[in-house]
Length: 148
View 1 (cartoon, rainbow, N blue to C red):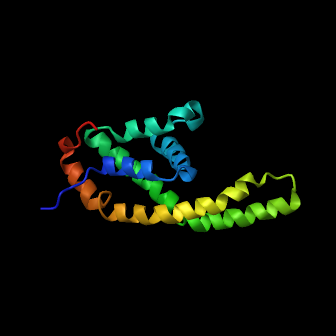
View 2 (cartoon, one colour):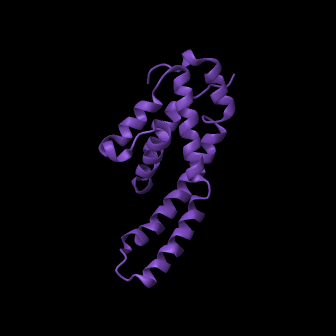
View 3 (cartoon, rainbow, N blue to C red):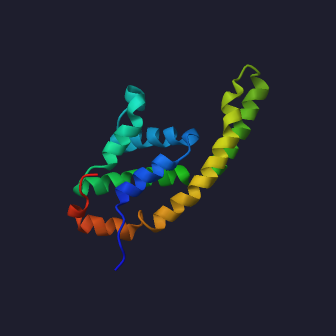
C-alpha cells in the first residue's frame, strides 16, 4: 500500500521553499483567486493567510488544494517564456522612455533562474502529493485531513 501524503502540507512546504524573489507573487495570486481578497489590504500577512487557508480540514481543505494547485499550475506553465517576453517588452519601453526604472528589468534574470528551478519541483509534486489520485484519495477520506 502506498503511503499517501497530505496535499495541503505538500503545498505549504512547496510555497515555503520557493525563493523569495518569486514567492510573494505566488501568495498574491492565491490570495486573489482562491481567498478572493485584495492582497494590498493585508500584504504583511499574505503568507500566513494562505497557510491558514491551505490548513482547512475536510472537504473544504481539498477545495483549497484544488484551487491553489490550479493557480500555481497556471503560473508555472511557461513562466520562463513569459519572463523572456516581458524582458523584451521592457527593453522596448526603455528605448522610448529612458527614465523607465531599470529595477524591474534587472530582476528578470534572477526570476527566470528561480522559476526554472521551481518548475521542476512543481512538476514532481503534480505526479505525487498533488496528483489527481492522491487528491481523490483525500476527497474520499476527508477525515484524514485533520487540522495542521
